[in-house]
Image 1 (tube, rainbow, N blue to C red):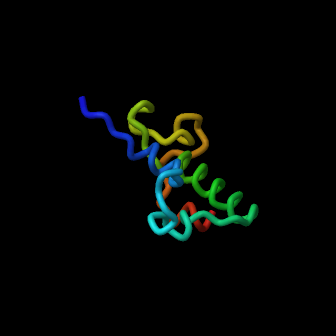
Image 2 (image 1 turned 90 degrees about the vertical axis):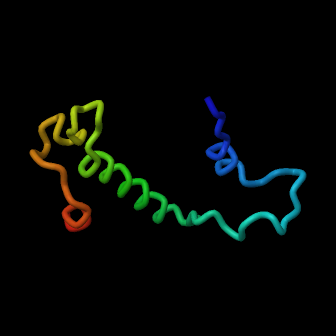
Length: 80
């Protein structure tokens, strides 16, 4: 099997041996706490209401616990 380190390299963008020209200006993350909270809330809601999981036999976690009957669309998630 092939070893992949891309996830580690993405998590640790700074390397002591590299010069500053190699690194991007930003990683796409906001430093504002309110923006972080909103992004995490949107991710968690999307995970629980829109993503069908193989381990749940094609259900979303919300469907598995009986909160909803069908997976939500992204539009339904954003208007809820």
